[in-house]
Picture 1 (cartoon, helix red, strand yellow):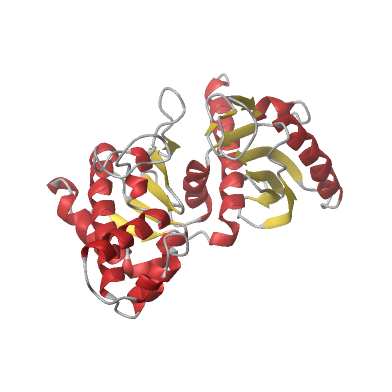
Picture 2: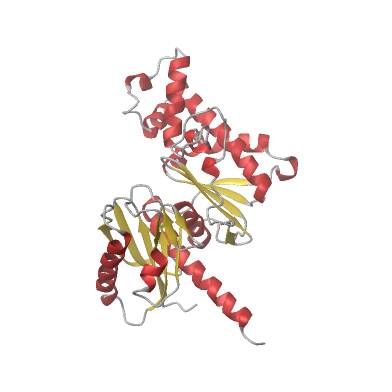
Length: 332
């Protein structure tokens, strides 16, 4: 690829939609944010994006070659090009964003969900640049995951493979927003950490500043700050969270055999309060042939630019796949 080639990365959220032109080295050449206006149909957002993209494009140097579009969105299905029953977006059962963008641009367009985008961002611009087999875990309000094997994201037959957050820790456990019980994300996430704290506060008599927080007030940051001061409730909550994370990651390793697992998102910023015990528990639960061979690492993508970097990586990855396909189909 030439040094003057760029892609457009678009990250669609329930409140705002960010977009940027990004080169192969991950440099943002121009970026902007608009309100998503989630009550409006998807085609309205795409039309508004088109108008703003054209304004931005007019300001770019004329020698830049726009090669494709990558989109990260909730409940996005790469195989179908659709966003399906998205939370916080009034788009109905399915909106085909790939088709909508093809109505404006004759360029490769690809879409996937936020966690898969994070995995591709790690592969193109982060710590997995030289890896073909790895997993990215996003730890926010919930737990998302992107699994890469042999350099390709795992999508499965229906486009939704790799949802580790909805694997079961305890079938009679905590209720999950997905409708099931005991999902991993109800234990390992910012929300799950707070739920663990309240369970410990009810079970133990230890003095703790966390007792002064109501359920609605308590945040993962509060737990982190208490743990840094040596608070036993907070430290125990992190240890329980790390144990469950390590156990379920050991299961994922048995399925895919990754070289490394990257943790990304707000909870991952807890550093060794989470990573060190999670690595310990991962090792203890691993099938013996994998022990000592799987690294647990923090993402190298900065939080502030991660969504755009992931979306841009989707675009670059699609272009690369098309190039390989073209070479394979050309006569020898």
